Image (cartoon, rainbow, N blue to C red; front, top):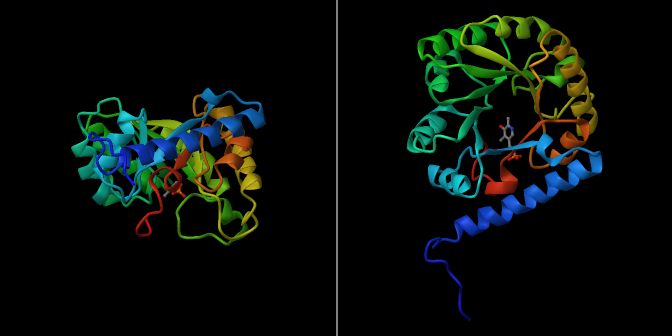
Length: 249
Ligand SMILES: *Cc1c(COP(=O)(O)O)cnc(C)c1O
């Protein structure tokens, strides 16, 4: 038997990523069609955490323009290695300690995990110092409502308004919308669609005071269909594009 290998892609990694991307694209398109939404209304963000900069580069060659990372220690060197890809946007989606903020604002266009006052203050100071404007999503912990809150960060729904006002008034920051991760426990456990619909309602409330904050980031590899059905504008997909991560990330 002969193996067909592309000399320009010896490990076949680019072909593998291309096939996975095509499958994810098909899922998003089908979900948009089922929901009566335009495909353009949903943006795919590829979560590249735990995967090397070489994969980011291949994804860029395949047309990906938005990637996400969740740990500054991994993301900062990766972003530096890819600094020549000037049209690539980096999202930060992990729990963020204030001592990492100065680094994160140097490469992140958007921080999706804004969940407390102190983080806003630190992000604002760092963004001003770096002469950057950083987009912010308020991360919502939907399980905080039932007291079953996990350890993945996020502010309870009743804290969104106050935090949003703080971001909107902070120099160097731009309030872009809301983000959530489907809860594993509490009243929304196993009810991703209901969780994402609740996030959409919270987004409607937010947009009354902040009309431009219209991003809704929800849905991952396992539940992107539910997120698109509920109205998400951005889905964050890792495993389905890059493969099962070698370690928890
Ligand atoms: C890892 C991660 C994702 C992607 O998850 P997959 O299940 O691999 O698609 C999305 N959002 C956040 C916040 C993540 O940490």
